[in-house]
Amino acid sequence: MGGFTVNGCGTGDSFYPKLNLGNHFCKICNSIQEFDLMEVKRKVKVLYIPTFSLNTKYAVACNRCKTGYYVDDSIRDELLYGRMSIEVQSGQIIYKKTLADSSKVKNGLTKYCKYCGSEIGSDQIFCFSCGIKAE
Image (cartoon, rainbow, N blue to C red; front, side, top):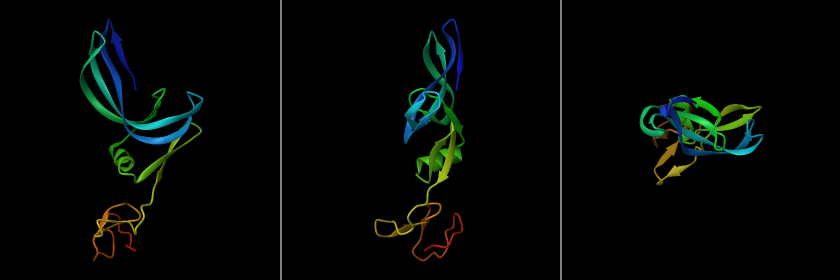
């Protein structure tokens, strides 16, 4: 997370919160702060005004100081769909897989895998995504 500016022109990062991940201890702020999954856009700036995006990445970061870690697309998707959560220990972010309730039924028709959260048809014995036996 960075960029550069020379005489008002250069690049810089813009942060856009996408998902609140709860309150955790931030080592930089030295206090409990809100952490978010953020969209980080590297933008070209002309006279300090952001004009267009060069690239987009995602990061888990402290909402106050914006210190955090970039995440790849697969972790981003797991966090967005609620199949993963975070825990901050000693300044490191630990990703934890969350188990969906296999008995959860939406619209009275579809079951979801307790391990990966994928849809399971009423006649399926195993999840097609992860191979775990449907309960």
